[in-house]
Image 1: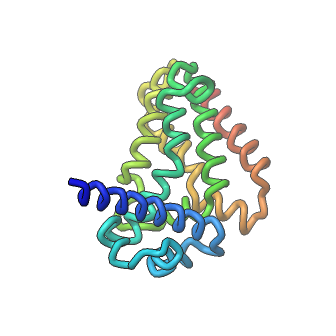
Image 2: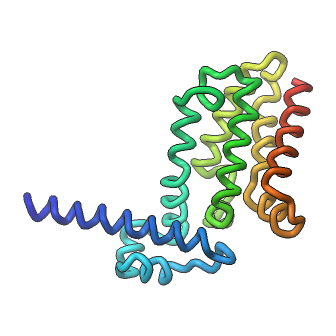
Length: 195
């Protein structure tokens, strides 16, 4: 019994070390593609086999790091106070949620980009995307006149917060985070104004 507890404690410590190392590597990388499993294993002080046993592959690791980083924001959107929480009127909540998501992706550019580039298949099938889409769709569905368009509108609004777009605007177009947030607010206001 004591051996099992010690093994679980070691596994938890290793998991936390791996997540912290991967998070730090993505934060300071020039490109999300530049972070390898070897880099993460070395930075965390664990064997590469530990990474593959725990996370499956690079995509699984990226998903775990992203999930741990975004969890406080998700919790605020699920049950938090205004302006993000579910008790906030939808006309105020939708722009607040999108602004918070954009800010998160600006603060975690390479990690967000790595997540969107990871794996195979449609990014729209990913669990994290489905959650954000459902949250926005449900809020939009509460606005008068949006019942038929809530699903599409949620997709269109989330497209404005895609990591590849954020990377293009911040990198190639040298748009400041403040301007990007202002432009998103104007766009969301225009979309909701037509609702």
